[in-house]
Image 1 (cartoon, chains in turn cyan, yellow):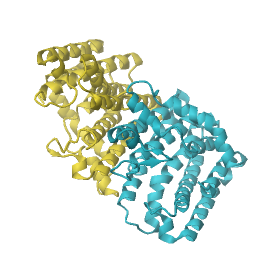
Image 2: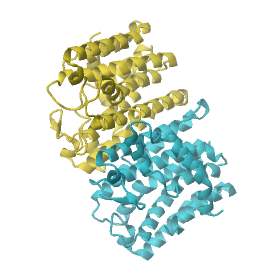
Image 3: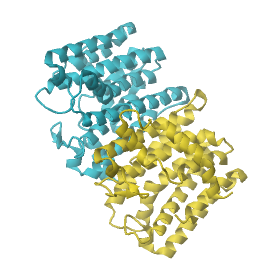
Image 4: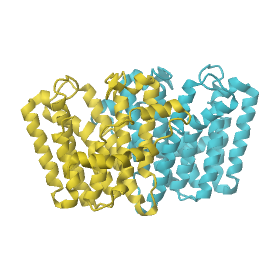
Length: 278
Length: 278
């Protein structure tokens, strides 16, 4: 199973589900809705949603059961980018070759569009729930909130903004919260909505944390010329960072070794996290 | 039943539950946690949490079952104040006699503390859920997300910021989303977690929307000298606005007339919304 083929195969379902989870661009307040959609469409490779779908398949479930998790995690990811780009944070004017939301609209609209995307994530995560899967949805809400909140993404961003370098452990702690928590939530919530056991979820979550840190190290390796933010590459050098990413990937794959052949798409995606060239 | 007595009786439970829902101020990242708590403690009268508890009692349930809803709605309320106070929005430097979060800390910390409070609201709303009430929690998450998101609070704030006056209908539409949606969510989610029927929830939600608009009109009457934001008082005059608030209160009370004597605390709170002097 090739990771890029799997990503491409997931894309139509993910795009359609994201579109359905967001208010129509022409419904009032149209400016807010357009701002919410600005960084969602056109999107990137949708790695996090694909991880959610692959995790569902990895536990023998139906990928479509994981769509609410796939959408929710992507909405949280994009909200965090919109707020990170704000003038008071990273002050970025361009992302993926387009103006950031606060440039294309204005600063207050960017704050509010991010707020609405974060809120929409939780709405998406419970949409279409029935009595049979209500308990799984509740736990997915808890897990996503922990991954996105003060103990996860937001706390990681605070420490990233405050960071004056730090050692390898501090850097990995920022990566674990700012990047890996949400990647782990994509995998564990996807599996959870597809009926995974708690043992499976724990293994998948651990795999997601390790792979998520490796993802961020790979990002920093690909952007090695950019002197921005917390970076293990700057702290320990390119060769050691590459080695560390590989060790994390091996650890992630070991966590899910027991899942058998149906976990091959998930394994391919985890390998892609480290081997990708963009 | 006197509303102020009921509010005072709810307070210790609400304060304790809010404290338990937030990360400790001295745990790292301490700056984020302190910023999250800055506008929560000391708090106001905690009207929204009390409405959630009273709604639970109004349907014959246990007020303590509504505590997750009470906490969640207060966290959403406070997050919205933190973001509304930002320089790019209302640019307020003081609230309740204390510096706003972006003044006491800084702008990026205020954005992130608001984000973390919004996220913590959803975590609080599902905390302690069991198989028996998972379905109710899921619906409460959906309802809170709708009240807080693009169709509710955030959309109302966008239109409020953009508003150049508008007629009475436009003003009430802003109030309905920016203020009343969350008040209605407090009432309906509180009742939902206490086992209310869908019919009861629909009646309570309608009462909450009407009372919530009346709440905002009353706010504007109490601040009639302040020339800020969307105000029905400025649009139709003080006497007509007072009459409109009373009509909305009557409508709210009519919605819940069938709930009997156990709804008296809730009725007292709804009357207080219009009769309060601060």
